[in-house]
Image (cartoon, rainbow, N blue to C red; front, top):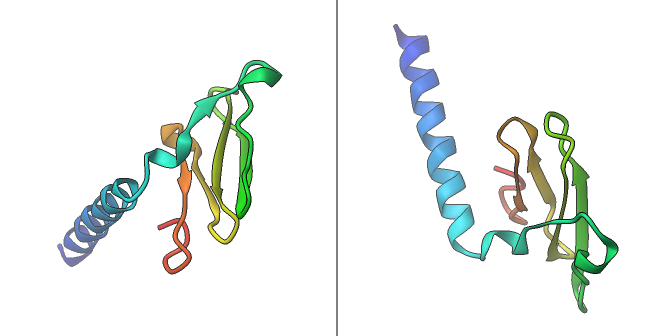
Length: 89
């Protein structure tokens, strides 16, 4: 019983963290790249993050600040910039 409650609590906390993290930016300037012309350019203090999603095979490219980690969740086809404090949480 306690394990179920703990798992539910952890799931709720993770969901809230994702909501809070996505509100501080416009979802990391996400874009799907099919051609070289659609590739986002990194400005000063930024970096381009690029990943090929495991399940769909889609290539996602987005721009983050240079100190922020590039975060990807393959299971839900979601990418974003992480936090310098909490990482990809």
